[in-house]
Image (tube, rainbow, N blue to C red; front, side):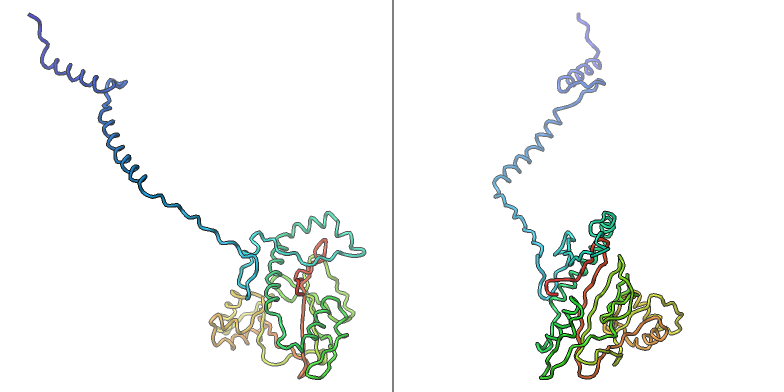
Length: 335
């Protein structure tokens, strides 16, 4: 009679065989069931296949490429286009460059001076941007409402360019001929950082002034012409003001303190007019403003007038005294 294996041992043997048949034996002796994984993969693949067939039946929509708007290449009328759009690379036009003459002629080719010029590239970029803004606004808004004033404007404009030519002009207005006179008590001036009117002056008539223009200076060369006496005086109500840069006076009036904070925040030492304060929502500020003027913190600039019935005109150019050349940075096609 053959010996029979114990019942429990037989069950374990059958389970072990089944595990080996249905799966691969893992290195640690545990079997890994692949059938369940395969069935799961097949189940997951079925919807994907169905979805792929459905997608193939759908019409493919072509995506339209959105055309980028081209940057504007010219200024609008009136001017509205930003400089950053017209000059994205910040390559603003260079003004009229005038070489140094005589004993200063070496500056044009001197390597050291060229190096100094390159160090000022950021400064020049900022100035040329401002000059381009000025040119575009000037071109749009500089005009005389009556053609009869054109000869006066021409005389003053030409004097800015050539000098000593203004008083060679005459202008006929309403049947009367007037000689054009230089306004002898007005001058050009240096422009300093945060100060429009610097320390140096540029007379528009011959004088004994021996002030020299120096490398690094920025000048507003201004010419003023009149059909009157050629001499102006303060008159009428003040409307323009500017905070002095060297003022430090204690204030007692609360309205003056509040107004000074507004001026410091919005204008600094740059000129402003009362209309600007109105736009900022300031009300009943005259008492505080007059207090700032009397304390010497704010400078008042009243209108300047010649004799009654006369006509005046003014033109100017901004000049940079660079290490290698002199640049008329405000020069444009119109002026």
